[in-house]
Image (cartoon, rainbow, N blue to C red):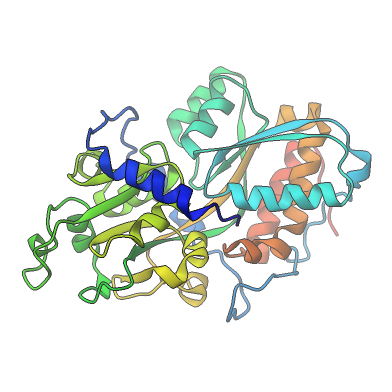
Length: 354
């Protein structure tokens, strides 16, 4: 993950902290069922023990084989828009696509899951959505009105981590109830009288992000106004800036993807959630309570009319487990990849086996 100039970040962070105006909420609160209804997907993680985030080379369980493609034969353009969480993974896979010979160009828009689904379902301005949450019913309906039927391709798993300043010596673990307090109360002592009587400085993902949607669903049962209207709360679209912001204030707190923590591990302290720390083993076993699936979405008509779209998704699914650990996310198990590959075959009207 590319690091930007630290001085540039300090200017941005200082400006963000100085801004105290609250912005009115513009997106409807997701209902708990919109995310938790897919919770059965979450335990589908790697089967083999994983001590570190090393690349996995097993592809599928042996039941599915996608048609072989040669990137050298592909020259047409396509577009992907969506989650800033998934974007680093999309970038890595696209870079490999180019290295192996892709002759066209792809527009990769690093925005949010919400915005990605809007482009795909409402304005029909993208071919693929990258998302760090499942599509919602209202988004499916918007797509159907544009004659699009989103098809999901699960590509991996992420953990949302809670981070504080490394000099914070009064917190090691937070329950869900305490997390709700941390992201709404004015002072740390308002949650626990043994904690400092200091103002909590909160840095959270923007209200349009899938990361915030998942966190709000799990911790606030979908009530986003509580966290968005809390005092001393600064929103930012870039999780990288959230990670850097926490490292500058001893009484600050934030949450973001595990991958961004890895980039700034020396300047952050991770907090266990419900007594469980975030690490490869607890994610693999689905014990850590803030894990979520990662997806690509497209449409069968698009994939059939634009072979470059189906070819890139094919390439993505075929090679993802060799690359995902390098980015900092967690590979899914063979059966989950087989399901995504089966969805690909159905979308283009094929049903090939090994």
